[in-house]
Image 1 (spheres, rainbow, N blue to C red):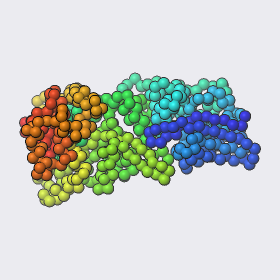
Image 2: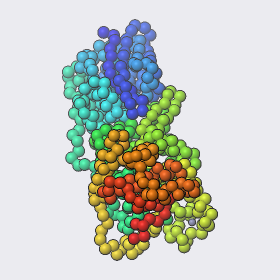
Image 3: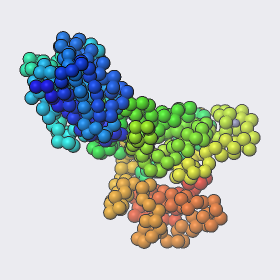
Image 4: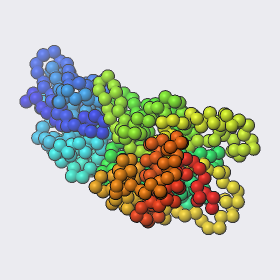
Length: 511
Ligand SMILES: [Zn+2]
């Protein structure tokens, strides 16, 4: 037989498609032609596969070989097709019986010596295979653990091409994937470590309960980063679908630990303010790497020292934050990654960033205003709460009368508030208050009495509050009421929401 066919998976964004790898061997000048929209990395597969076959102790068929990847119209990236191409060629040449590989998806890159190397994106590839009705996959040993998180698929692993050939001939067994590690994810940073900062902690709790975006202003050492990186610790764990999405994105980015299973904790991404645009939104050649924005999907994107970020960078973030997805255009088509993240931005009050904030700082009010002005406009308008943190006084650190409340206690209140909100918005399919469209909140039955929202109407009238800001205040007020266990926001909740929105000291920060 001089024709054979095996299965593989190609990725477009997080979506995978079953790809048939056909090999046809005919008489003619010995050569290997690869057709079906391969990219550069995949074109180089010809040399890798040939060397791997020869170095595995097999004869390379001295015939004219055509390898075709179907469907031909789908662009194919990267090196994950190597193993399937080698298997198809060897099966076509009669070196390997095809029956044991029937309806089996093969994934893996080949080294020149015939070893099978791990590839990025194995989890979404196996998930796509499962959706297409495939129940058996063979993956590189280094990717076997992540492949097992997909339900309904039997995963086997290979370390060398030699082993795959021996397996097909019934002379050796494939490898079993490693067992799930006993220990769960290590605990992340806990709110119990944060001394003082009542208003900061309260704003964080509201942000977690309602899914609101948050801005933290304050001098260095006021705990902006400490607070932000503890937001995931009070968010609920990811449900099955979200966990699969988040783990798949980490798999494509190549940042999943080898023994790691399904990621259950909401991710936290803190790109540096000098990060390249590609690092933020995604990029690179071949299989495009998701950026920090997508790696923060279903979790928290923390932008520290945000005024230092370029205007162009902030502009590039705006659209994905709004739409919840990143679209990257390339000559060979577009790639789309999800990017529904909760945003926390932080800024020093002035460019000199002196710790005391008032004594050492020489910045004029104009300089300070101009510095924070870089933040103004569309991005800041999308942020629900603006919190000014004061430096933590030595007294708060040393004379703490009782330990700060741990994350588990706060997370329990957040979960209760989220349950109430999800039940209220169940008919619309919204899970948190931040997702509810403004018009729903402004119409019965959810419209609040106008005497309760007078403060918002006045602010809108004189132009200190935008229409978007008006709706954001309403959503915040609902979250405050949810956290307090009440059915509807009262006038006090609306006022507090307005103060949080405008960055004014609230009644709580005074206490
Ligand atoms: Zn200054």
